Length: 357
Ligand SMILES: Nc1ncnc2c1ncn2[C@@H]1O[C@H](COP(=O)(O)OP(=O)(O)OP(=O)(O)O)[C@@H](O)[C@H]1O
Ligand code: SF4
Ligand SMILES: [Mg+2]
Image (cartoon, rainbow, N blue to C red):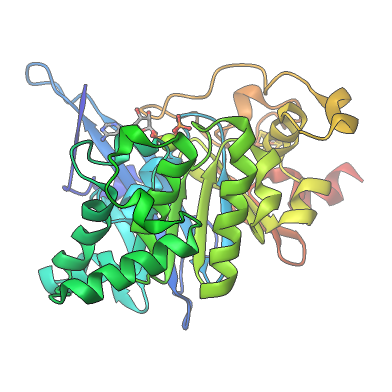
């Protein structure tokens, strides 16, 4: 229905910069500023059909070795954001900077280097692995592409990474094809492939949602272990808040193409600020039976259209705390009601607090 677009929409169409968009942070591994990724709707006839605003004004900084989770309901733009970081989606507006180098200005050679620095763990391991390649061939390919000519050196690195993802004895797995191993083992291969070039960042997009419940925790622990032992930065994408505790330090909540709350894990889970995060938390299935009583419906109402998003706060048509005349008119800027806890919601405007006192 839609196609990618590189042509930037005119500035007039974009909403204003959200939050800390102005200055790029120095010494960050990854810095994202006012990022917009819009997909053009395929036109019929001469009319302009519009854009799907999958990512619409995102700002994000990631430290070396930091693990963050991005959560949000289906269709809010999580994968679009990740694919942009991975260089798969084109940037419509804004910037993605890795170790001070902007993605958009990278040459072909720079891009090859960048791809070695950022590993990708997909949601569906079977779909991610080429069915006609053995485990050895799958793991050898990135090494060949990145110029490791010595076969013995390649095998040494393959065996080392297999040990790290606990796929042993290696000789037993090397000649196997993906269909000959379990889903959990396939995901270990995907993680090994993402790790083999010793990246600084791993992007894991719903890495356990297609696996049996019995192996999900093991895979999350494996990722956490690798993150710690290699001082890896990890961006973990999920719509399941109950799994983020396993290895994230910060949680960022996404809604309708925008980040609407950012805080350290405990702070966000115990004291959510944004009404959408509150609703999301109440709806989260928690493996801890003690929390089962808190199960509730997801925020009532449909997620908004990303082609014509609501004016003002995008959550306002579903928000139980909606402030008439404000939330439906003005896009909320970033507020910091507690140190290090950021939210985009008019309830945290000091002026609003004064008026309602
Ligand atoms: N290549 C594309 N072309 C056109 N539209 C796209 C493309 N990729 C994503 N979209 C649209 O962008 C919006 C966000 O999709 P995205 O896959 O990023 O959401 P998500 O948060 O990852 O959802 P889920 O939790 O279901 O994986 C959706 O409306 C989707 O249809
Ligand atoms: S800005 Fe208004 S509509 Fe949006 S979440 Fe806050 S209270 Fe609700
Ligand atoms: Mg997705």
